[in-house]
Length: 589
Image 1 (tube, helix red, strand yellow):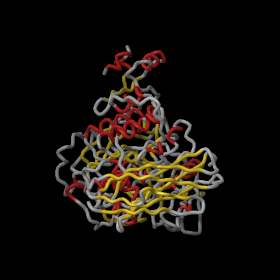
Image 2 (tube, rainbow, N blue to C red):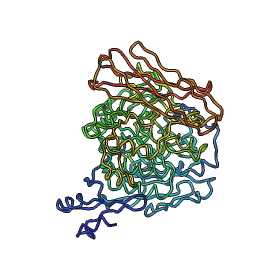
Image 3 (cartoon, rainbow, N blue to C red):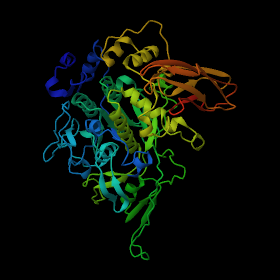
Image 4 (cartoon, rainbow, N blue to C red):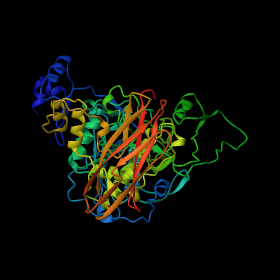
């Protein structure tokens, strides 16, 4: 690689080179070396390695994906989900390969799981990365997080799974017949950006179909400094959809449009059980009641004999989880992306039973020596693989659909959430709660391709040379071209305004007919005294499959008084309903 030659201490300082799916390297550099490299015309960006963190069987039934749901088993078995996480426990029943044939012929990956680690026809590949943690010598999951997320997406049917008898039933993933490839880029110290980029590099080249990554930072970053955004962009260009957890820290870090960003919501099940201590009358030591799960560790540190972590019960489901991050309404590092609202969608993320590592603490506390094969976790880490599994389910019926078509299908068929229950509305739950079965037959889809993203970033003022390096193609942005991210052909419509008085905003979108060849769709919109919506044309008539039609949406109001406007439009042919949220918010929100 030409870019590396400028480092005269290359043999000692090179940490990792990325060359299977994209071009780059990680190395220890002096300030002088960094400055010299930064000035080279072929260098996109140089940024320090940082640490990201994981974001932590009733759920599939709740989504309508019952055990007896119609499936396309041959194609589903040919689908490969790549899981970038804390590794995997290969001996788990959720990853048993009984009844599985050999891996798909197009699979190019390997099983480099380390000593005493064996792959099979279900778990067809494994790799581990240890750029900052040389003691990591296996893809084996010592934490439990990676096994949990992998089994949610594509775990086998496992009867009588439970956590000490709680939530007992059949544990399964969204696509039980699909294959899994595990990429351990995270360990007890977090997830180094160096290793995350290496995992993307390998997963793309190995031939996975979907990548699920329940990992993120505290804040969004500029494109050129965001390894997950860069890795997922290259995945998108290879036809691979990437789902990423929105986060549990109050702020979404996943803001790029090609990433499917997932928030967490509830199901219709709450786990309620009695707390029995001693003989019920005599208490030894102290039992601490924690309102937050993180308080369990503090209780142990304080010397508590035991602790109970409470979870808010949800009586209107699905509802957004307390810990699910919402989009940053002010993005200091990404001000040009204010008109793409995230998360894109929500999925079950509260009290999810799934596979676990028997050597991982069920409370993530080293003092907790219990060993379980299945555990209950909550967070956007759990909702993210639900969407990956749902996307794989849709892809099994439409193997040739683009990542954006699958994403659009899941967004436009999502359950409509109750905006009166959440003041931030779509900024909490995106397009709504996923409905995998309806997404198989969405009728119309909003598609975006690499050229659309290039056009968007050019319009936002990004440098042509920098974009050429990021996207891997020659790009010349037209002089004087201006645009906003709201103009991207996205399934949702969002605008950020600088006023709270009389206002009008327009959106132009193009839909592709993936339903019946001869079909007519009529539009309806939400109504309110606060705003007015017009759609032109208000009827779309198609004469062929894959035919495209464009329309314009104008939303206006008299006096907004600084409120977020949450509206929607819906195209319907009488059977299929294609809904898009419309959100306009002022700068004082």
